[in-house]
Image (cartoon, rainbow, N blue to C red):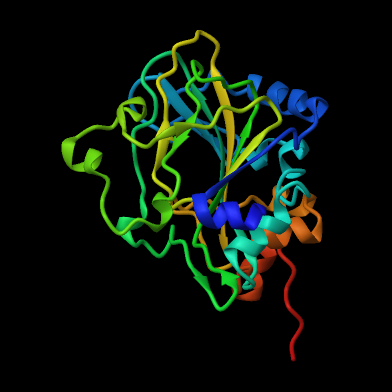
Length: 267
């Protein structure tokens, strides 16, 4: 049934999949980074966005500690992600925490009409082949007034651009066909990135906190050029390391040694 609904709508809501104790650990880490400024680095955590502080992202969040690492292959979603991406191996190409203050939400974007390889939805010969599957994990409750993600069900298969794009309408609460996906802390929204989506305007005072993981096939890369640190790679289990770095770099031995990477044996 979940596969049918994902194929039909382009998204699933996974209820109560991360324990409240684990959510508390994640929030405690985010507390240490919430005062960062645009373009600031703190270790390997980076706030890339420019401009105001209404919304900003803590990029490379898996570098922040084991509670985030634990989510890389979380049993609540990893097998579905593997299935929807396809059988060619996984890459967690992007991972961040999004923080949003009171104000406008995230504008309408994506949609199948763009036919992008990176975000595509495909089903062929009994198998899904999706270019990017997103997991949005709520770190705090997000009701309709809290600026939840909003989606247009079925738009991952649309051949026609939504008229809102041409009319310049970006506020999701004004986009016809868009519905909110409210989440409780510990719930997750799974969706293919071809689905047209955004987030509703935030009307409440408490900072919205949501973790975003973007999985793709093993050839997926980070579009901003971030690479996992050797410290992170050394901490990960072999299974998690293979998702963060599906293929280790292949460099001359002296460079591999300088990076603290194992040098492949000859033969």
